[in-house]
Amino acid sequence: MADNAFFRFDPFDLPPEAEAVRPKIRAFMKGALAGAGDKFRGRTWSGYDAEFSRKMGEAGYLGMVWPKKYGGHERTALERYIVLEETLVADAPTGAHWIGDRQSGPMLLNFGTEEQRLNYLPRVARGEIFFCIGMSEPDSGSDLASVRTKAEKVDGGYIVNGRKVWTSNAHKADYMIGLFRTSTDPDDRHKGLTQFIVDLKNTDGITIRPIPDLTQTSHFNEVTFIDAFVPDDALVGEKGNGWSQVSAELVYERSGPERFLSCYSLIKGAIDRVGPNPDRMQKIAIGKLVSHLVTLRRMSISIAGMLQEGSNPLLEASVVKDQGALFEQSIPHIIRGIIELEPAVGTGDQFAELLAYLMQTAPSFSMRGGTREILRGIIARGLGLR
Image (cartoon, rainbow, N blue to C red; front, side, top):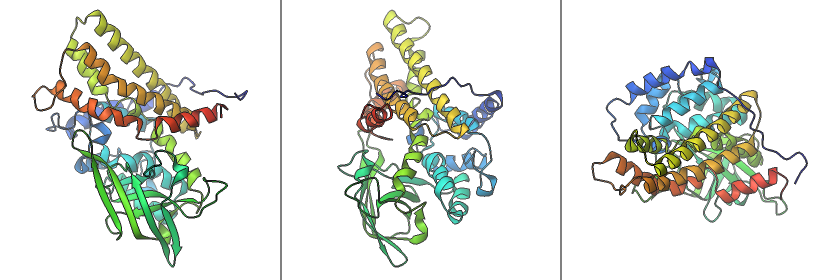
């Protein structure tokens, strides 16, 4: 192990000026979700509602930290963190704008051209256009260095051939930021990867196939490129620098509150279900769940503080994502073990339906944002163990 190997999770508290946004976003949620009932309960950032996303944009809750010249609001990352928390615990359907606001927008701010920033970011901030991410491929999992989808240079742009899979909401998104191979170096798989903005609505040669899950909803997709043309001005950042750019981008994907709040409504529902006089096993189980939740939140907030300072806590973000997935996958099973209830849909029992939905979807939580094996490899490398 390297002598200086350690995890940095410095204590950090959200400041009062950031906390001041909490009652405002709660009031907004109450109005924006009025009449939605339990339609999106438990779906949070997998719930998709373009109209709700437009309301978020109109209220100034998208592109919060971006410069005003790009449609942003120049708020702090910590204020944005609180907005994320409140939308998740409210079971708000954030799936439409989630990727653009969390990941693609910041990536374009860091690596995009001025023309790209002016073209896309204001529309993302208004909730008018939506992005997806084209990283994973069949037979590759989260091993991005094994990307095989090729972008070959031609006059005026590139011809793309290959496939992406597990692409969240590709069937509904307007644009994809795809990671393609523009050259091959047998001695270094990380070289020769490049990112491109792909117009999914207006590009010939792209086929999007939704992948139904156990709940018969389609969140993931397979995207096939057959001689699809992307113009030169769609290239993001530096040609061949895609690995470095993606590595920076993944910090935003792996450290946020979505990594431990996806099943929050189930914990809250279980507390309500057992009532004021839980038995011993219920007390122990719920106590453990809440303590784990609080710990992960403190770790995530610590990373938010580092991002606010301009740091790049890739190692710590991987830890939060890995432990958050383990935690969230355990929640439905733990709760089923302490409450005598058969999870089922169509029964009219909202808690039973929520439990059934999350039991069927939670297995995918260790896939999204990087598989467990890849994350632990990153952690081991960061600690000097490989």
